[in-house]
Amino acid sequence: MNWAANQGKTLPTVLAEVEISPDYFTVNFTVEEPSDCFRAEVKEDNGSSWEDSCVEVFLQNPANPAEYFNFETTCRGYLLAAHGPDRNSRVKLSQEQINSVVRTKQLASVAGNLVCWGMTVQIPPSLFGLRTFEGVTLRGNLYKCADKSKRDFSMVSTDFLFAVRRFSVRGGNTFCSRSETFLFASRNIFLFAQQR
Image (cartoon, rainbow, N blue to C red; front, side):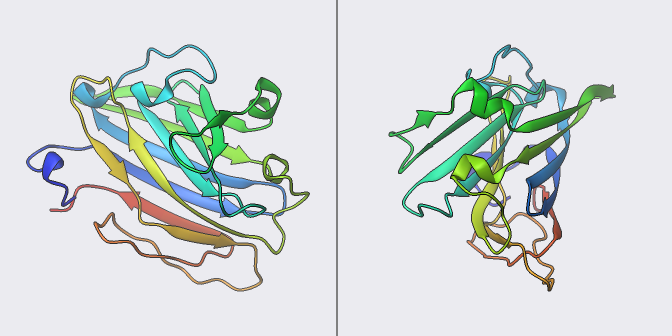
C-alpha cells in the first residue's frame, strides 16, 4: 500500500468475498495478520470494535444517499453498527437491529507469527428500510483496522458499487491508493494487501 504510514511494514492480508442477494448483502472476510497487529479484547456489541482486530463494511444508504451505515465486526463477532450523514453524527443501531445482522466467525488460529481468522457478515435490507435488495445498487467500501494493537496500521479497499442484476461484471483486485468504482452483480472478491 502506498500510504506513507504503512511503508516498510508487514501488513495484514485480507480477502473479502462479497455476494448480494435479495435477502442479504454478504461479505466473507479471511484475515491473516502478524501477531503484533492482532487484538481481541472487546466483549460487547456497540463497543469500541475498531480497537480490536476488526473488519468493516461501509455502505451508503440506498434509501437515503445523504447517509451511510458502518458495520464494524471484531474477530470475536461483536458488532458496532451506526448510521448518519458523517463520521461525527452517528446514531448506533439498537440491539434488536444488530441481532438482525448474521455474523459467523472462524476462530483464530496461530501459524508462526501470523494469526488467521475469518468473519462472515450478512446485512439484511430491512436496516435500510427496504424489503429486498432486488433492483437496488449499493455503494461502499471495506476496511480493516485494529487501533489498539501493538502496531498501528490502516487498510481500505477501493470503492465499489453492488447491484442485484441479471448480468455480471467482475472487478476489484488489489488495494490501491486511488478511488475506483466496480459494478457487482452476484459475487466478487477483493484482496487487501500491501503493494510490493
